[in-house]
Length: 442
Image (cartoon, rainbow, N blue to C red; front, side):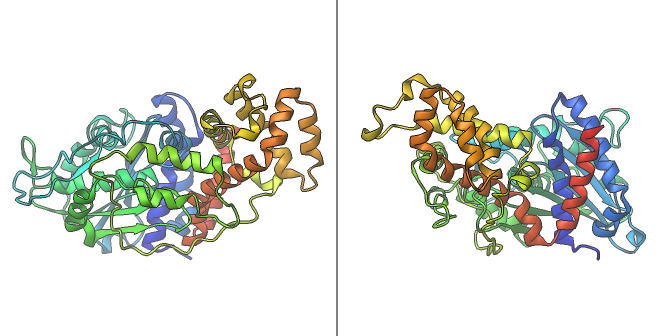
């Protein structure tokens, strides 16, 4: 059965997130992205689910971001208004690392750079400086190579060409998940603000042939309350926001919401010192801001997410957590262990003799034995082979480390796979996984 518009937008943005499973420079990533995305779009099962979509620009894949533009090209395409989608990546592991790291791009805000000169309001929309840099890259710097669709054109140049050559009005939806949704809000609003008038004269579509819409799922907020108000006044009627109530990411970067995120999985996973440290990393980035962040379309009701109690299946965890996810868990736990302050009762433990990264690597090595053996025998055998200091430390901390790992695994699931369950796109998720395994095995 063919998917709805909402399901299609989520699936198209999910295509760009697949690039996060690869590594390399921009040239290598682009080649891998192109091969994988084309194989999926040409699959008859894919056409039956999301319809026929043709890539007309890109994909362009950088280590930080993947972007492509698609056009609906099904048998009934000529009967409807031309439909284009700008699909943006955002939730691959590299972005998770940025989200959880001590990154100053959130602590510094800058004015919304595309506010029309004719705008007469008294708002002062501000966005994270990191978003400002991403907007510049996606709108102007990223360009397909000479053998790709849209060769050597920036996204704005492509839009200018499209608007000039279109025989009829067109619909352009900017779609992304996670941080890709945050970027989609910025790109969509920038295209709208630059449509009639640009910084150096006429905009990319002065005749207003194109209607801009945005599709945002699981996204953190990009800016302050004035930005949220301005976005809703300009694009609110043509935007759709979806978020899972158990997904931590949409709670960022609002101070009150971040504080609540530690308790999302309680009482199943009660917040402990390690989980509170993780939450503290997020709070540290934004608590000193004079102008707090505010979520876009804040009155949107959430999707009814549910805790997944089957994640602790050793056979399944290796499929759910890839190599990059395991590296992410190691990096995050190392940061948390480094920030942990021993309690008075733990002063005799060998904290000072063990590097936090060594402890995190050891925890990663114990992950599969822990999840794959409900009796705990495999875990005990693995731990017995560790040196004495590590054994002593883990024996004291393991119960609390378990809670942290459960929290992180649930967090990753609720931001990724859970959306396919909630939106009814599990068939497409299985198709993506099948193609990804095939490409990575070659």
